[in-house]
Length: 157
Image 1 (tube, rainbow, N blue to C red):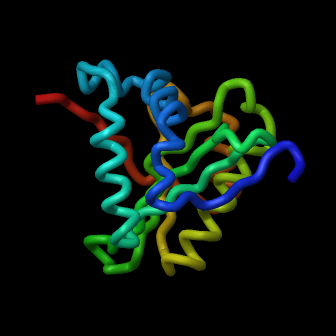
Image 2: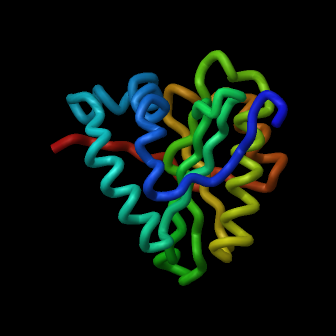
């Protein structure tokens, strides 16, 4: 292994993501929207259920000490309008000290490959939080054939 390795996580290893997912939530606007800290137990339960039913996958990058330093979580479900399988990224996070390396791009490529090869996805959907869409990322999406589809707004009721 060089300085990192990207692999797929099994359902029973979701607990290894706790720090990464909580860091992701803290850096986002999620705490403001949900008016609370993230509930990792609930997150873990839903994710394990989706993984068990082959509706989600987790790609994780580990460092030389086998500690998670990056993650991309996606679902794969039928598109309501076409019936084609769409793979939708839900979480894409790399620890701050590892940003600017190839880790994020390696996760992105692994997502594209797995979605098509393992889930037979015909649509790939990447999401970004409002606080994290640099122009550079937009250009990467466009170079790889992605088109802007929609913008979402969320309201807590």
